[in-house]
Image: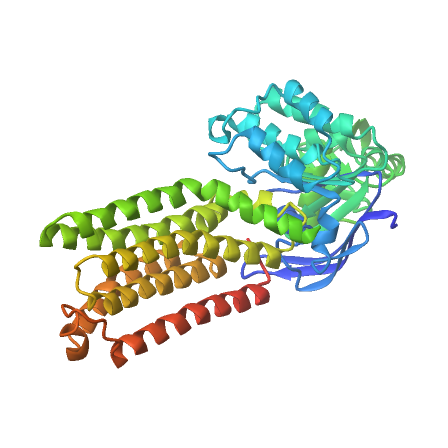
Length: 298
Length: 224
C-alpha cells in the first residue's frame, strides 16, 4: 500500500491553445489539497488526467499507487469523483441511481446514504430532471460519498450553488474529513471554500503549478506592508518583494518572504512602516498569480 | 468482478432505453399490420414505408439516447467515475446498442418475412425487403460507430442526413436493375447478383464501421 494518494511526475499535456506544463504534485493519504486557479488555469485538465478522462502526453500519474490510465479501472474502485459539469440520468430517479451504484460497489454504505438523504433533504423517488442545481449537486455528492472511497476528487463541486447548498456540501465534506485515512483533492476558484477545508493549497495558473504549500505556511509567509515614503526617498528593490504599488507617499509592498526583515530594510532606506497586514487566502492567490505572470515569484 | 460491472452497465442501458425499444416494437408491428392486412395497395405502401421509418427511428433514437445524449449531457462523467476503463465504456456502449437494436430489428424483420410468406403478397418482394433492412442495419452501425468515436455533433447529423437520403437512392437503384425490378412482383424470391452483392456490401460495411470505430477509440487520447 502506498502513502501517496496522488502522484504527478513531470506530467504535461498540450492542446492547440493551452499547455499543461511539467506538473509535479503529490498528495499524501489523509491530506486535503485545495487546487486553486482562475478560470482556464488547467484545474479541470489536471483532474481529468488524474481520472484518465484525458491522457497525458508525457509524465507519470499514480492514484493510490495505480498507474493511470493503464490501471484506471482498479484505481476507480477507491476513488470518488464529482465535477461541476457531471450530470445524472435526467429521467431516472435518485433512488434508481442509488440502487445502480450500490449494485456495483460492495462497500456501499446504505445507512450512510439514508443519513445523507435526510441531511440533504432529498427524496429517492425524485426524478433527477425535477431537482434544482443545488439538489443535483448534493445528489451527485451522495452517490459518491456512500461508496466510501479512499480518495475524493472534487472538481469545482460548489460552483453555481447558493450559499445554503454550498454550506451543506462543505459541512458534509468536513464531516468526511474526520476519517483520517481519506485524501481529498478539491479544485475551486473560490478561495473561501478551499480555505475552509484544505490542509494543503496548490495554486495553478496558465497550465503551471505556481505554488504549493500547507495553508498555514501561506498565511504566515504572505504579508502586505504599508509604507510612508517621504519625498526624495526611493524604495530599494529587495528580494521577497513580490509587488510594489506606489500611490503618492504611500507604498504597498506585497511579500512572500520574512516581512520583518523586509520592513527593516525599507526602514533603513528611509521609509516609515505604517502597517504590516496579514493577507487572506484570496489576496495571496491573486498576488501569487499576478507575480507569477510577471515572473516576480521567488 | 469487472465482467459483472459491464453486464450491469449493459442492463442499465436497456433499462433507460426501454421506451424506445418497446415503442419501436409496438409501432413496427402496427405498420406491418397496416401493410399486410390493410386490404389495399395504398395501405400496403403506407405501411411498408412506415415500417422502414420505424426501423430508422429505432436506430436514431437508440444511438441518440444511449450514446450521444450521454456525452452531450455529461452523464458520461458519472459513468466513467465507476470502476471501468474508457475502452470498457466504449465496448459496453457498443454491445448494449447492438443488442438494443438487433433484438427489435430481428423480431420485426422475422415477423415481416413470416407474414409475407404466409400471405398472398408476392414473394419477389423478399430480396428487396432484405436489402432494404440490411441497409438500415448498415446505417445503424455507421451511426453508432461515428457517435462513439467522434465528439462533434456535426458528424452525427451528417450521418443521419446521408443515411436517409441514400436509402432512397438504394431503392431506386435496385428497382432500376432489370433482374430486381422484374422480379419484385413475381411469386418467387429471386436472389439476383445485384441483391446478393448489395447484401454482402452492407454486411461488410457494417462490420468495417464497427471495427474502425473500436480502433479509433483505442487510439484516442482524450475521452471527453
